[in-house]
Length: 366
Image 1 (cartoon, one colour):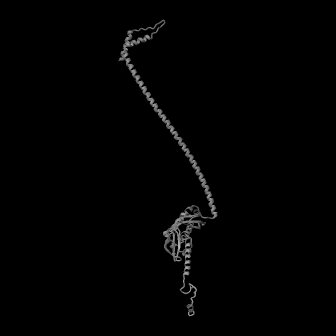
Image 2 (cartoon, rainbow, N blue to C red):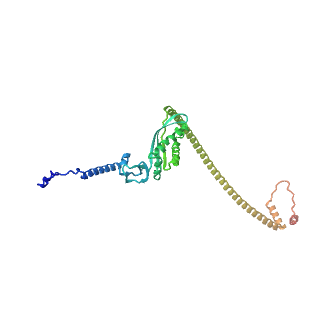
């Protein structure tokens, strides 16, 4: 301290600049600036990493700004405990390192299960190369499902479950049933089996559909099936040909029946036409007969009337004088000349003739 007194009393000298880090009460501005710079860079990098939907778990833990993609919901863990808060799609903030984030899909998703070996009832090993399970986790059951079965809930209720159900189905049926007869029913049976357990234990999981591909079987058995199918195809072709022949025969039969019915119908019409013609001729004959009968009756009546009138007239004419006149006219008209030795003897007494005629007239009147 004493050595520095003369310098202070004299001409003032330029003092060297003080370092900001000297002494206990130095300036920490630069340190804060550097620290702030690293924090900002860290936040930006973490935020950029959160913008990628497929970011790893470490990035989800370290990020502050994160994004929930469309069709998903945001689920959070704090200190390993699942939080009840669920966020919708969009940007959100969380505490880094303390809060962990995972996007959970709540729309339709397809889980692809590959290579499922199983043994049939007869002991033949087959392999289902691919089974697709279309499912969906309902938004209202996200918390309950993740709380009970974790983020990989589909491993428990889809992947492992489909293996179990396929093996159960194969062990209860023969190769013929699994590969051919009941193959079209496997989809529905798997769907019903998965949905039944999910409804009972994980109601938030909905099984939409199951698509099962044809299983692969041993080559020797496959060749036998191919041969069987070829023989079945030949039988089906023969049956189809038989059906075609039967249809053709049936068609010919129908054509013949139709032709016969047409001819019968035509014959019936012709017969009815002839009957109508006969009936018309009969009616015409009856009319003609009636007309003839009426005409003849009229003529007979006229003749009868004429005869009666003539008879009445003759009756009035039948007098002795008229009869004598007619007799004389008849004798006169029948005059004959006889030649020979003997002449017929005939005495004609007009009086005797008159008396005879009178007697005849009285007889007629009586």
